Structure formats: C-alpha cells, structure tokens
Image 1 (cartoon, one colour):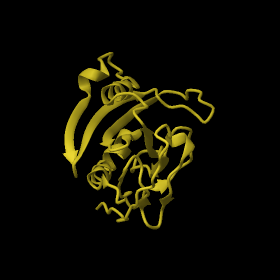
Image 2 (cartoon, rainbow, N blue to C red):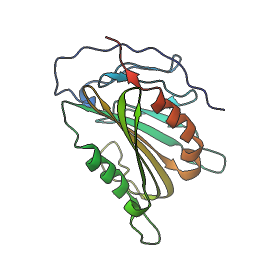
Image 3 (cartoon, rainbow, N blue to C red):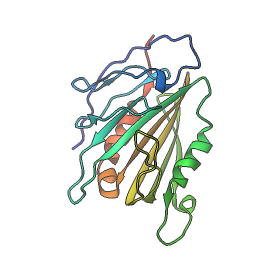
Image 4 (cartoon, rainbow, N blue to C red):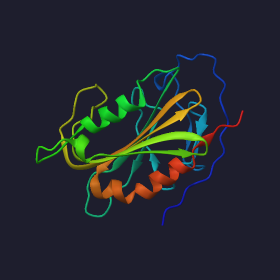
Length: 194
C-alpha cells in the first residue's frame, strides 16, 4: 500500500526569470514530505522515498529502495528551468527515450508509451520506456556504465513559471513497484499558494 505524505506549499516569489535549479535548491523536509514551490507548483513526496545526493541542475533527488530481487535503488530526479530554458516538452521526451536502447535492436521510440493529461489545471506529458539505460552520469559529468533491465518513467509538468521535469529511473521491477507512488505524486501537483 502506498501512502503520500501530505504537505502544504508556499510560493517563493522570484523576480529573476533566468533562475535554474542549479542556483536554487528547494527544501525537502523528509518528515513532512513537503516540497516548497518549484516553477509555481508544489506536490507531495511519497512516504518511504528518501532524499538523495545533490546533482548539478537538479532541484532534488529522491531514492527508492530496491524491490525484492533487485540490488540497485531507483532514483527520481526533479529538474526545473524557469523562463523557457531547458528545451521543449517534445525535445526532452525524445532525449529521455533515446537514453534507452533495446537489446534486439528495435527503436525505443517505437516501444515508448507517451501520454498527455491535465492534473489540477496543469498540462502533463508522461513517458514510459524499458531497456538498457545509457543516460547516467557521475558528479564529474562522466558517463557511467550502461544499465540493462532498466525502466524510465518520466513526466513534464507545464508550470506557470516554466517546465518541471520528473524522471524516475532504475531496475524495471523497482520502478514498476514505485509506479503507483510516482503517479500519485504527479496527481498531487497543484499551483502553489501565493
């Protein structure tokens, strides 16, 4: 059973439209499961997801414990680029899909599931794709080894101040086990109070 930890959120006024996630980390209060406003929206973090390491260009990272039979944790990275930075929704979905390759040589774009929905008045585009993941980089920006048997669940929310990117990646079994939590987190997304 998945539980979301409820939390309020308050908009942080910012007159600098060129601000990116790299210049301003948001507070993730594990005990409250609360995310301060990012790009004019906020959401609830699923219970049991824990804060992960900081990376350049990320607002924050959550780690999800491995499912039974997996050894690697999954991670959910959140990115925000205000003022129209970070590329289009379509370009980012394509980039994520292209980070996955198929062992049988098929194109990941042919297997990816892309969806569009509206949540609490916000436009959301989602993507699901499995395969060998090659989009991992370490803190020095160097690519790590490819990871076979991985699954990517992504979502891009069109917030009032720009796009907010949610990327859940990890072993297939772990990501699929976290799928309901990821979906509930997205459904909790809402405009931040002023």
